[in-house]
Length: 514
Image 1 (cartoon, rainbow, N blue to C red):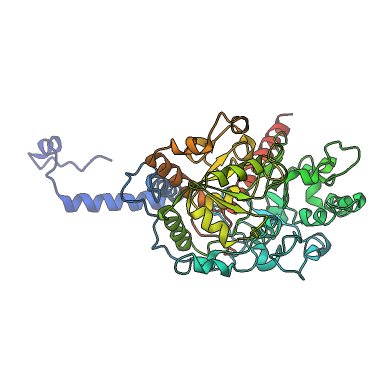
Image 2: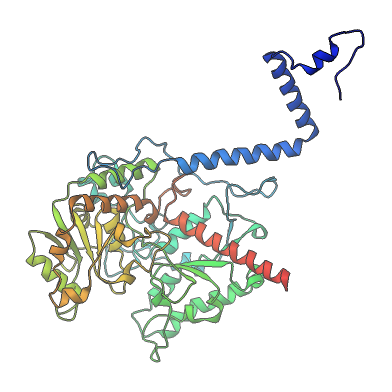
């Protein structure tokens, strides 16, 4: 619309050609008026624009927020994790309400939500062994279900840890991940009680406890009995039939080899659970995976450290980072035979001969089960910790070592480097040392000399990387997690949700094109 024109004004034409005099008040009034007009005319457009702008601001601040410490910080002073962080209460997060409309999607749960099956108790709760001493090394089931899988408080650590840090330590059984994941999922912020809204489905079957009691017996049929019944039960479920288990997952509290017979004609070990055709599509968390099976996802062994808050986590990281370490390396374990045939026996003998540099904890003499104070003293006092194979290629000690801020020394790559990819640093050399076991056996490599060749600055940087990794390899105590910090449980569940979501979207895309 053109401005009004009057023939009575001799200067009207000239005035139209000249720019108006600047008036800030008029400009602001016009701008506001115009903005209000645009909003009233196109409310949805402006609401969408505001949302995009808000997301951009959040993204910029998130990507530019500093990490608690940098691995490239100068040698002095030591990097510190923030300790003044609000404590998150141990409360249950409300589940997804289907009556709430999310105009821009479910922003709280980027990869969707998980539905937890309510299994008959014979598949989980009834398997618990309650009447035993949780420190009895001969009863592997002891303490599995105490405190929702975390075990009893480790009161013996109060004498070696400062302040209230010992309250975050428990006598956690290394095979308790089935119980921990079940408990945490029941209180998970992205759990849904409506299966129609679920991205993935969790089967809370305590498979490790079901097979464990028969592993050292000849009762072959009993090893398979409960897992066979579980598979029959789950196949009757409506939501299993849609993708035949592709969107289902569970946790195995023992290593994958305890659920595979690997063609053993005499069936001397394990069950046939993972050999069954119904399990070929199901994702499973396990403390040691099969290298060829993409459905096996290795998750960290449960350690004894379970922080109650982010503040407590940061206090522990600072403590482990600054601890005065007086030994070059340590070995914790028990010999399993003569020195020539057993690598652990060789390490034990080597460490005893290098007593000025190596600290030994002989688990055949000192009880090492479930959070011994001797283990903590040795790990906290040593720059490095030797990590040979256990009864299989992995062992819980790897994570005990790293939680204490000690740098792990590996002799087999499959102990860690080809496992736990969701949790450990991508660059093995940034947080660990690898030594060829054959070079140790034939005497061409000296463990002591190799470890001494690392400068103080190199050791410091590796320790910083180890301590930085601690949140990713521990299971927090609160049912709702640690707020903004993602522990091993959060990382595992988000990973499998993303995996299932991507697979489902790809399947739907292929079906649409066919």
